[in-house]
Length: 444
Image (cartoon, rainbow, N blue to C red; front, side):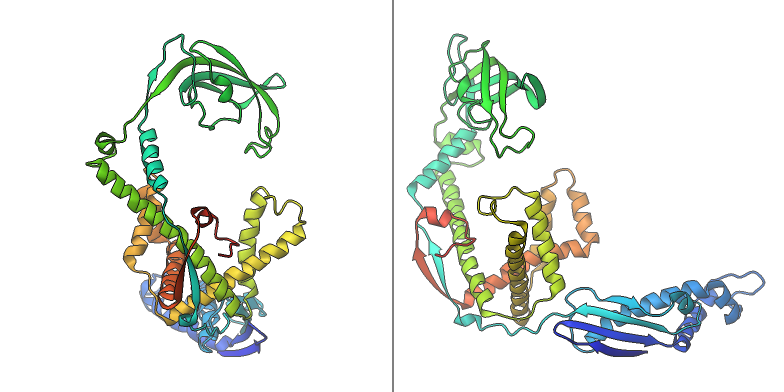
């Protein structure tokens, strides 16, 4: 077997592999000798069939397996022997007439091509200076959280038949919607509970029911928002014939020990402690999000190297498919498709660059993802599919590639933790509103 490097430009590598017909025949004979004692052939005692006969009976099939094994082996070996790591799976391009090769009449000759991962020299992360935005937790946050818990435990009592509905009441209604006099799909409901003022229905719908009594018929006129999910309804005027079946008023829920017991805790103090801990963790996660964004920006600026085109293309295609499936935001509405593709390709390049840098830092630091972390993530994924937990876990047990997809973000967070432990961090007080902003594109 001969392996010759044909191309070594940039990250592109191409090798020419030659395996003589004699070498293939040698491997074929060896393989047939292994199986001769396992087959029963008419006219021969077990294990006594001549190789020539075995070739005639099984030669093409076995040779096909041998060629496939050689291609798989050499496709990787051509790179590993030279301490090169393919960025994508190497793929062969055959020059030989494969029918002749399988028949044992021609040499096997093919190219193996792939891009390799670039050699990266990561920066010394201990020299990084990063700003961690932090914000004080307002007392109102705890009060709001308690009110939210109380609202979730709200019960409703029927109003008198003569009493009009008020904001925050629950109205039970039947309704039929029409556009230009015609009913439309999804515009009909029976015994639907609506909390008046919750803004869960089309804008203006609930407001027109305030003041109605049980038994009233109300004509509700609304306009579907331009960004409404069902495009065939977006921006259109509709009229709903609404029958108010019942009106109930909310019964005030006291924020006390009884409320805590309703949610499975012993006392109001216990509930407050749990909520405070949750709010503090939320603020820490928000702070970390901004800190991580600052870290990634600095890592991106500090590293410049050639990127594997195949990896960038794959990342861009994934991003672009999401862009095409979503509504354009205000920033992108006036941009051409070509302008958007340029912008999103830069995002793809950044993601690939940072992925490679973080992977190299993690590799050199021997960062590991504990098995229990992976197991916990698999369980979390299984819980997202109630009733199918067993099937989801079995899927991950049988699909290493799917497990790797779970591992990748866990590994990234471990590497980020590793870097942050060594970088110089300076806290900076900011407002709660600023902390709540999406860290994408922020400069804190």
